[in-house]
Length: 170
Image (cartoon, rainbow, N blue to C red; front, side, top):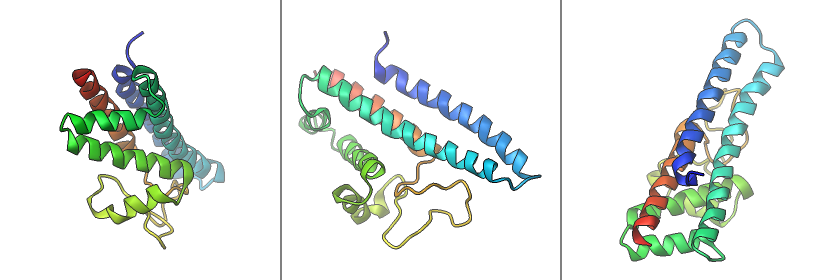
């Protein structure tokens, strides 16, 4: 079997492509009908993106723990990145770990960390007091991180990059 890091971007791109096709059909149907089912279908697509991002990071953590023979795969990976001078990659990795934690757990330490650096993040976080990312977007689901195609693909690319650096260093 091919390595997870080699498959994750392909798998993610495929999934997003299928979701885009479905979304296009639903939007086309919404031109002639305001059916609740169609709106729920758009929200389901957004939910699937969040589940995909959370799932790929959770699986990556498991693979790291096994491959690095440790109890906390993310901590060990961050240690390797720091020791090898890959600070920018490590910082992005930490940001996305926090984002996934926020998607899984809501407000807490990870959320506070991201809010404090919201102006420099490569993705959008819902700030305290904000109710929507895009008011009026019927497809929006209730998450504190905006999980769009770019975010999901960035998760997959980051997994590839971190995996490659770990392979190089180990």
